[in-house]
Image (tube, rainbow, N blue to C red; front, side, top):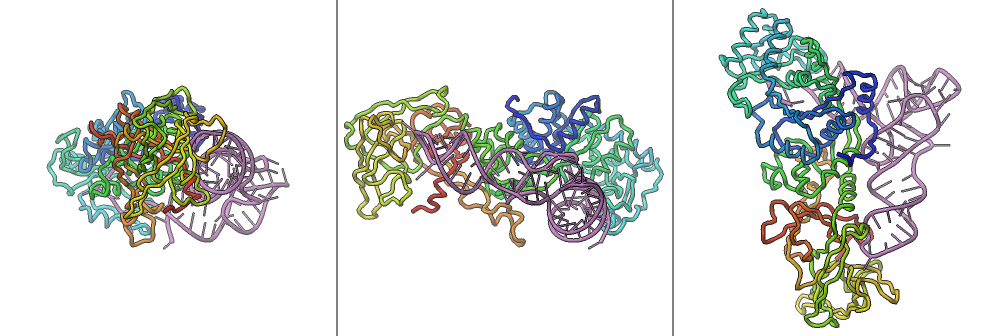
Length: 564
RNA sequence: UGGGGCGUCGUCAAGCGGUAAGACACAGGGUUUUGAUCCCUGCAUUCAGAGGUUCGAAUCCUCUCGCCCCAGCCA
């Protein structure tokens, strides 16, 4: 990736830089992104991905992609495949370094036996409820399990039997022998292994005991030679356990765990549990619904991966919990698309205009630039004729002071075409609704410039009526009506704040012919409207479906907050 | 009332004892065949609060206040 610009410093980069300068780990930097394949990745994961892979890129190190697949009850191949596709789409490459915690099940098992033999772990035969009761509370110490001092040999043999399937789920667990009175609950003899007679999506029925996160994660990091193990804040309390495991097992590689604050974004929800709810309850149309903050959704919405990377760079990394304003993300997307998207004209809500002094059956092709600021992007031909469509919103019969667009008697410019003047408004006699406009054009203004230098106050986009292609356009808006759906006055469920108009579908929108043949996923700017992308899924042969990625900045809506 | 973290502009965020970067947002102005883009300009005498150390503190010390996380055989 060479579009990564001069980056901002943050506490992790500072720390890693120091390590490299001090030649710690021989100056190597090896990080990892360790998702659990139990859901789709979202923009919060993108922050972690950019951080981990970014660090590896900055220091010419490596970043592994490792699946933390230690709980087969919740994990699926579908998720694994989606995660791989998403990380790749974001633009990162792990080379040969694709791993799974399940690759290490044998090693992990051997480490566990070793721990027992060192007197640092034991098989506990308390029930789950009893373990909880023995744990104590936040303010009271726990009690030792009656099995805590069971002979090493007995624990070893029991553990072997757990592994060979002789016990039922819940009857025994392997626990670390640390300190039941520790003020850090993670150190009160945490569970290391539990029996789960569940088929694993990679190891099948080879195992019926599975390691817990703390045990598997620390050792997987060590096995892979990770130097910096970066995770989110809630694991801060686990760091002593992470270190304990690696110290007791005296492994040669002991990575440094560093915690940072996870991303929160206004007007959306980034907890896997809640995203799953939205998908399963049919509130959105799937994991790749363009309203979702999932990578799959974002991709379908038309956000470029480079914009996501820029966003992750701009928001920074710290240990302060925060909620980023939505505008920050949108600005990154506009920034990117403004430079790269070709411009095209599309009328979302058409109003017919008849140019009365244009020849009947007349037709010509006008040259229109694909990007006004970037001539290198070339021009295209746009057909022009006697009947065209303009946006309904661009005409007002009784315009207020600041309305610069078309109105009776007013002259405006049609982008790259001609000046037109509105002479007559044709209405439905019954409803009074404006049906069409009769205008005249000035042939001398071809291309949109006037030889006499007279000015018009606005330029409208348009499409030639007989040449227009009908398309469907989906206008997406934020999924929730409040900045923090889960943090609103108690009592209410986050789903109470779903934005009922987060999706508005427009049919029979009129677009110029130039879009024929563009590929699925392509981004375009519909002039004066926003950025749109051709939906990958919905656009069948016959009809094109465009998703609105983001609107253009709207100073206008501040001038005229409520129209009609 | 146990332990672990965090508190710098509306929102993010640099800063690490030498006198408050930057981005987004916002407000003005200029250019403009997108009310877009682009370009200027403004926007924390102050760093949760109170004391203290120091010639000098957002940075060091003390206390106070506020917020987050932890009692899965989840990750």
